[in-house]
Length: 175
Image (cartoon, rainbow, N blue to C red; front, side, top):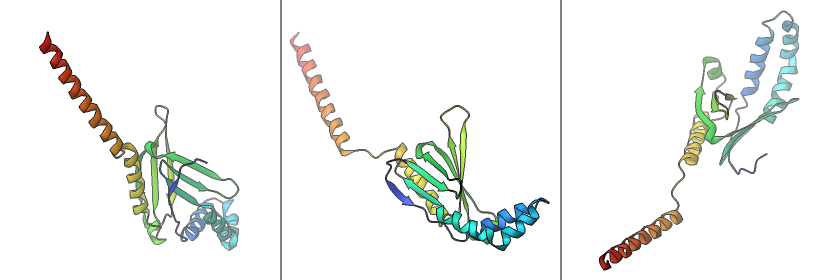
């Protein structure tokens, strides 16, 4: 865990639960072995799993990074520094629209040449606004606002430069 202060905590739409049950159940039905498993899945195991999965979903936008956590038996946690985020794509297809859901896809640059990683977040409530907040936070890191103290230091340095210029002129005049 980082010491990054939490700026925004994303909320997830509860409709992600039936979406996940349908998505995984239909995937199971695509194979002969999966058909009996799909029956058990649709009879209750899927709803139990989806509820526990939903309870453990977590996404936090901090001042310097984005952290996402999911999983039941195997927990996955990803932390992406905001300065590494290259693009945030908003995806909303017909099935996602039916469940009133959308997906945010994050494309990040890796530290090695040619490496990049992707992260998908499905089910964030008001995903467009969350995407905009992430982009604003990223831009704020890339272009920090000017500090008054820095402006004052710059003014002092310029006045010193001007005085040194005057001294140099006086010395040239004496010679």
